[in-house]
Image (cartoon, rainbow, N blue to C red):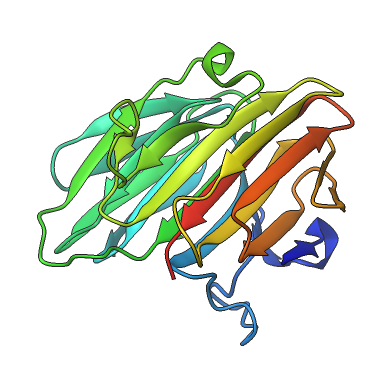
Length: 234
């Protein structure tokens, strides 16, 4: 099953400094049919204006992955961590027993991010944060794990959940294949840019594709495309 969720039908809110689109219920947007997708709880498509951002606020018991599409995000937290994550790269915050953090766009132009939350499969762990550059050349024509809690994904940022967050870049006409980590998995695919076809379903930039009971997907780009995919447990 592959269901297209068009970008122009997503929930969202515009706060002046933040233009947010929600693939799943979040904040004031509530859709009982879109509470989560397996262990995937949140996929927000955020545009943050220069000099603005999310002031310090708390989280607990959630794996929070930020993929930067454009610009950069600067993170600071109650553990003393501070770092800047630039376009094409990823940061991971395991909220664990509790953490406070802020995320600001300190760049001269807008910053665009995907904010992805996945339920952890173990609680009571200390909080942590990390970031890592991922050269786009390494994911040209194929899916590469950017954050993962699965065995063997040693180059990915670790998360405490039975899931992978993957990235790929495709040239027009190229096809990438991905085999899910087991039966009954929940996939969610979003082109950050470009246009692709997956299983007969056409996705424009920033559309979502909710995928279930598919062992393998094949994604073909009709335009140059940048893709993010989550492979999550139930």
